Length: 298
Image (cartoon, rainbow, N blue to C red; front, side, top):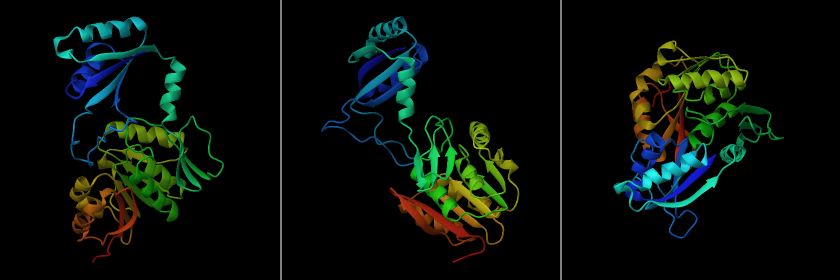
């Protein structure tokens, strides 16, 4: 394989990326800050559910992977011949052996400790010696690989509160990681639901890879009452889903909510007040975990 490396100004990042991926045959396209590691490196992020404050860095490095040198050279030639591409510069055109590309990609995902004895481990990594319970999970199309604080907090709660819950609902299951974590910690009947069909398929595949049994499907497969309800989504959908999620709780059952920023605690607490009294039970990097029990009203 060959990699075409370009330096691109802020206004051209999207059109260059689109042209490489949609018209010029790139197998993959990635964008990074051209000034990363320097004194002028810039942060580029937004809060969940909100647009990023800027669309791109002032100067970006765009990397495009092609199957061979000819394809990469032709793509560069066609791109630079466009009138609108003035200011795009070729930094490099270099060989990238297949095995090195895979190694570099996999190196970004290391084992993640949830607790000292409970780990999330990609399939290509050895299990850490300290791990007594392990979720084998590789990056994929569905959200939830254990690298985000909201996922880790939910799994920490499951690990510390572990019991043989008779029925568990993972609402907005993504990769199925919370449902799998519950199964590994004693849960019996588990329903994992998501509005995204790709997430449902990912959950089924991940459950099989981890040797656990659960039922994955769209939200309409959810039954009436559960002994534990988990939802790691974002604050706005959690507010809208309050009647539905509370309605799935058996009497006295715990509700575990994540995807909430610290400043959103009061609005989530107010949304669920008719059904249960929520409190903050964990926090990490500006995110919080809120828990409560059905029937416990303020």
